[in-house]
Image 1 (tube, rainbow, N blue to C red):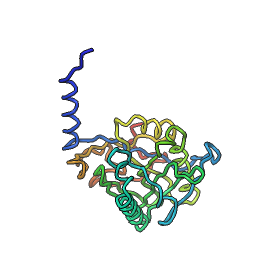
Image 2 (spheres, rainbow, N blue to C red; image 1 turned 90 degrees about the vertical axis):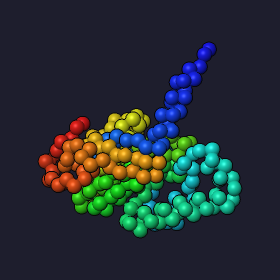
Image 3 (cartoon, rainbow, N blue to C red; image 1 turned 135 degrees about the vertical axis):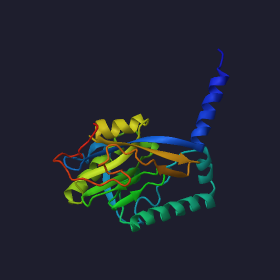
Image 4 (tube, helix red, strand yellow; image 1 turned 135 degrees about the horizontal axis):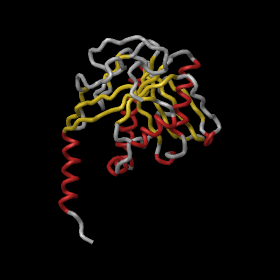
Amino acid sequence: MQVDRRGRTTRRLARAGRRLACVHEFDILGRSTAGAVADGSKGGFVLERVTATGGPLDSADGERQSPLIELANRIGPLRRAMQSRRVRRQAARFARGDVAYVARHGHEVAAWAWVSQEPQIRCTWSGLRFRLLPDEAYLYDLWCFPPYRHSGAGAFVMRGLLRDLHDRGLAEHAYGYVLRDNRSSEVLHRLVLGFEQVQVVRSFRLLSHWAWQLRGSGQPSDGPCSLGARRFGRVGTPIRRGSAA
């Protein structure tokens, strides 16, 4: 069997180029928080609402799986330094008023997701900017640990947090984003959780550390992720007018 060396080299160069600079395209998804019922018995998961450090997230690690990080975790000082950095990052989120929803299986953390209700939010990884109304929430950093993938833990967390936001009267609508080529996340959000597409937005990412939302790419212009656009009122549906779903 012959290997297409040129094709492999081309793919490697393309991946390297994307790390240097690329344009990402995102689906901005939204849905009403009503009607999201969490099955507390499915898979044996238990939902916990966390508002401060000192909870189950402090000792949970492994959210980034790579050979380099696995090697670092075997070295005591490096492992403790990474855990301390994780706790500081979580403390900064809690200080802003963000809330974490955690799915536990026994004593282990299976999955988590975060909620923010700040009026203006900038995601540093994607460069996207969200402008929220008082009864809206931004959902981010959904993560399921590898041993619990395909077990329903991610859907359990999302349904639970949507129901909690509705029951507490904190938010009527929730928004987030998904990379358009992330098929598994699209399936989870749109087919399993009932989110609908609100906007399509692009951002420019440089050196995997800096990203900026491209002005004029948030279509339609009355969604939550529009630069300099005026926010319009609702039209009696769970999603804003102009939904592309």
